[in-house]
Amino acid sequence: MKVQNQLEKMKSLHHTHILSPTQCSNTVVQKINAPLPLVWSMVRQFDNPQIYKKFIKSCKMRSGCGGAGSVREVEVVSGMPAERSTERLDRLDEDVHVMVFSIIGGDHKLVNYQSTTSMYEDEAEEGGGKTVVIESYVVDIPVDSCEEDTCVFADTIVGYNLRSLAKIAEKMA
Image 1: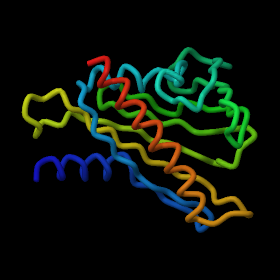
Image 2: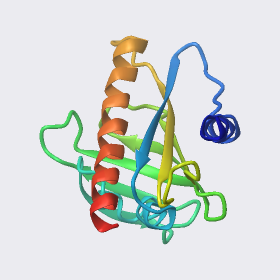
Image 3: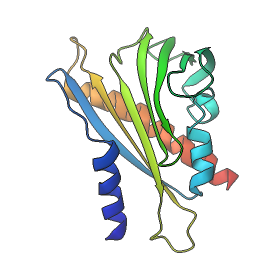
Image 4: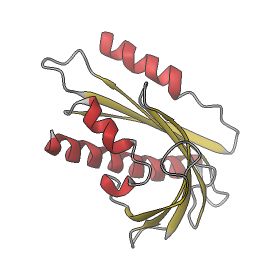
């Protein structure tokens, strides 16, 4: 029961969003068999998201050096319904392991997209060394789409990225 309480606590602290009628949101949770410091060291690299986000071909910092307020330009791999995305790091909290970024430009349908990622060590697991990663998002629903399709699209990308993070971190651990 303690694990569920920790998950709910993290969700209520960092993943509660106020939505307009033209937005949707969801939360994706990934358990990773790797220690929190290792997982966080990969997620916190705003200037190197392609370390685990395999839909990203390259990343160039436009301003800042990876702290809050930094802006990056990412090039998306071919085959995706976009070529580039401009993203701003809104918050990076090293103490509580929270990262928030917003998409502020690009040639895609993720308008007003904001992602919040948090994580905690799963102390209920025997042997320790397990990390629970929670990623939530808020995004506008495009006029030519619906809430369900928008969330399915965003969930697919977030889920793929988190599974990739788990696979890479577990291999490194």
